[in-house]
Image (cartoon, rainbow, N blue to C red; front, side, top):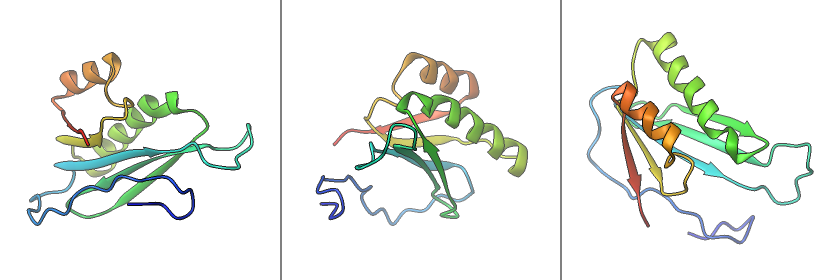
Length: 119
C-alpha cells in the first residue's frame, strides 16, 4: 500500500478471519518513522500496539528508535498491572526493533512468543 502523505510504501498486516479468544493473547506492533519535516527536538517516530481481541490501540511517541525496548517493557508492565494479563504473542514486522538480544531475552524470561512477519 502506498502512503499518500509520505509517498512511501507501508506494510499492512494481511486480513485474517481467525480471531483470538481473549485480550492480549495476540498484540500487533509496528514502528513508524522518521516523520517528514520534523525538527530535531520533536518526536520523529511512533510505536503502535494493537490488541487483536479488543482492537484497543496504544501509541507511544518517540524521539529516537532506540527507545522502543523501554517503551515496550513499560507497555508490557502496564498491561499486567492494569488488566491482570500477560501478552502471549507479539506480532511485528522484521524491522529490527524487536529482533535484538535484549528483547529476545525479555521474551524468553516472560514466556512471550515473538511472531516476526517477513515481507
